[in-house]
Length: 260
Length: 275
Image 1 (cartoon, rainbow over the protein chains, first blue to last red):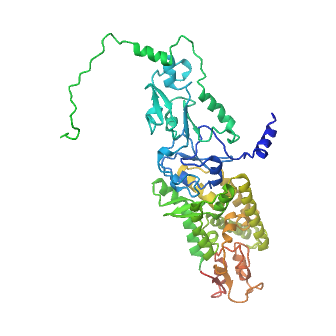
Image 2 (image 1 turned 120 degrees about the vertical axis):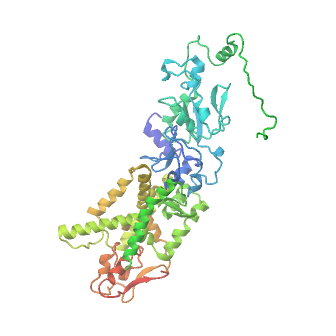
Image 3 (image 1 turned 30 degrees about the vertical axis):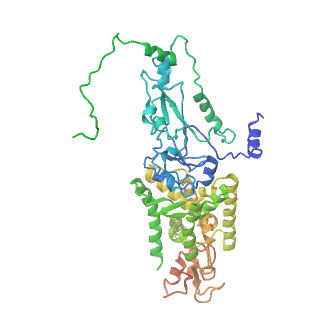
């Protein structure tokens, strides 16, 4: 069992796994509308038409390896802006040519790594810890602000925590703009990554990241107020006794149409 | 004289593969794609080998794929394998390579320009390229990847041109083109189109008795119709055009017709069929 060559042979000849296809890596996405990886590798004729028409230069061509010549979106460099120019041009339906609505794209799903996300760190510690890699103490929420489907794909829990929902299309704009370095706090898990049995031999490498992004994984000194406790405390704070009164000398018109 | 028209056509197609990415970068999508699959104003044209491999590898038959087979099939059925002789960008490069090789042989080595092809018998050459096509298609079905596209010279060249225009670099597949060009220059003259090219092999299969071919007006058969046999020397595919004009290897390039009529008036070779 432990023999890697034996397990390779077993996977290929008993389970019928194909070692050359199904290579999943985090932030390694197929263009929008791509069919499942195994069919994609068979259908894609490497004509690179999608790459050629991409107005944002988002689609990259895969280099040496089993996927040579196939199109990829690498959101850390350049995300997909969902213009849907590529899907209708695919000659072999490796990209679903009928897909026109960007909301129906499922390239992957964003996953926020709570252990390094600035917003979560700040709410846990009230200030960013030394090892956060930045000295800014602020609620970042960049991913929420740049998301093409805000309040659908990314919601703000308690108006503070960015949380990804199932509506996420996996375009990767949040990954491109995430300020956390070197590893981004939000990453895209490509569609099909969860299927361990069908994922390719590159899966194991990605799986490590996949699991660390699932678990918060960080233990803190118990003195520090965090999460709900911190929120409760912040809401109880009375700033200077009396709340400031805002004065607006402006009255909104009853009917918005009569502006002249 | 057919040769100037042929060169114009070849250079035009060669230039087009640089023009398409430039147009696309200005968001003009009237013509998109590379020579694996191209779309000219809604008319889809796909390399038949790519279609064949896609069907074998994925086990499914999508109607848009078959639709893009119509134009190349009709072109090959009417005019023969003119893609290779008149359009293919790799064939233009191999023509230049052959010219360099002939110049080198004549001026430096003092030998004759003409030399026998690598596999002299056309039947054997055909067997090799259909064996290669069959093996590649079976391999594509076995591993689920259209693997012959990695050795499709026009497709690679067109992709490299696109990458060059868009990113200013070349990808490593250009090494393959450079390798076969160097092999043709120094070791095996014109071997790729004649012995291996899967696209050419597949296009040769679209053929009827009415397809345009080269035929001799007199004699024909196994005996040459004149003493000079300039047509045989001119043929890039190493055929003897007076008798083997109907061979699957012929690309209808017309070099033999030009050579036949070059010096002593109208020659005996000409195109027959639909053309």
